[in-house]
Length: 255
Image (cartoon, rainbow, N blue to C red; front, side, top):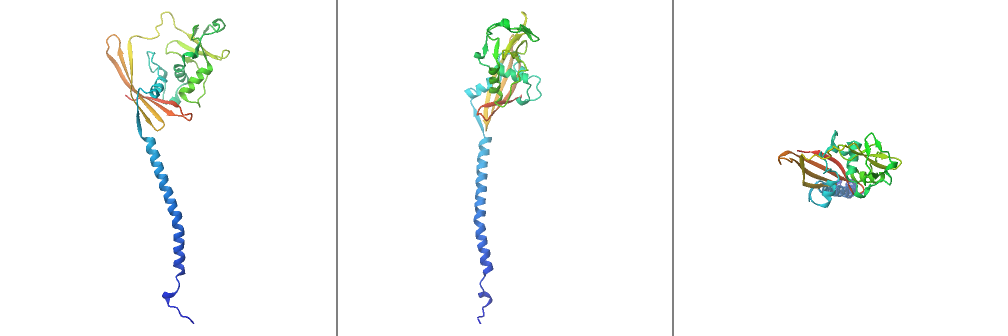
């Protein structure tokens, strides 16, 4: 009989435990490495997306976006936003959205009618304007509409397209599949007041991730005296859409 001392008995339990610990160590290490990599990537991405990049206010990108949402001719520069309860363009009335669509039409989109006599001569909105700008085809209005608000929006032809805050409006005609210009103006109508000068200054533009913000200051001067009647500041926001073009999302008065 062989008699073994206590300290000579093989430590099978300890050996098995060590093997198990070693087998768990590698998977845990791999998981830790993966988590660290994910955190680093997330940190870099977040930092990149949240960093503010200054843009040249006079650059083509900034100026093209800015002019696409502005009426420089009217005596009421922000008339297309009047009556809105929100600065978000998604909440804008359809009529006000169509004002911006009108402002972004190309010169070639305005057409003379082949024969003004076959068109309705008068509507509730005024008399037919027979000129080289009598017609705008629906498809051109829809193109302009989507250029401002993105490809996911739909044009509502039941809503008229205003030209100015006073008396001119385009009314959709299904027979022509076009918008026809009517005016309630009289001979004594004065479309644009000469009492004030409106001076616009894009003083800052910036890009944060997929968002561009354009900052504008408006100075209103009285023509007769040159005195400054009012100063205000606005920020316009545009977000990069899925088609890689910027869509207008909001305007907000900040001062």
